[in-house]
Amino acid sequence: MRFKEKYQKEIVPALMKKLAYKNKMLAPRLNKVVINVGCGRHTKDKEFLAALSNNLEKITGQKIVFTLAKKSVSAFKIREGMTVGAKVSLRGERMYDFVEKLVSITFPRVRDFRGISTKVVDRTGNMTIGFKDQSAFPEIKVEDMDNPFGVEISFSTTARNREEGLELFRLFGFPFKPDNKKESK
Image (tube, rainbow, N blue to C red; front, side):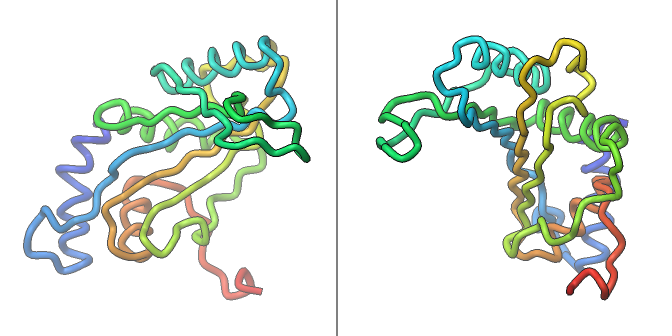
């Protein structure tokens, strides 16, 4: 079952029941997913930027946008207008397809993965997670990776608070770590 259909047929009724909503439009939903990558020390390396662009387009199925420095910072050797990263914003069908692939294929491929901490969901119900390198995604061949780069994924929701967002992500199938009292230390 596609994730958009799953959201409409299973997740919305479950959210309405759990959170005691009378109208299905009150149930939280995903607005967008933003995939973000920083260039780091490779800001002037054209081959790295081409590989970054190619890999992100394979992962998301959409053209990327390079992010530029807004102002010069001499300590980091960055000038205004330099490429400092890349990002992709996913909405609609592509967003749901990406979330489905992330939950069902990518998370199980992550080495020594024990679940996502519930602390990554902020007080407005949005979540940001990161990968140390892009090799967990099935579109990327490990043999072809010259320069591994970290990937940050932000999920924007319409949730009003942390509990609503956490419940939405749980119903989507995100693998969260079990809540332990020892974890709060």
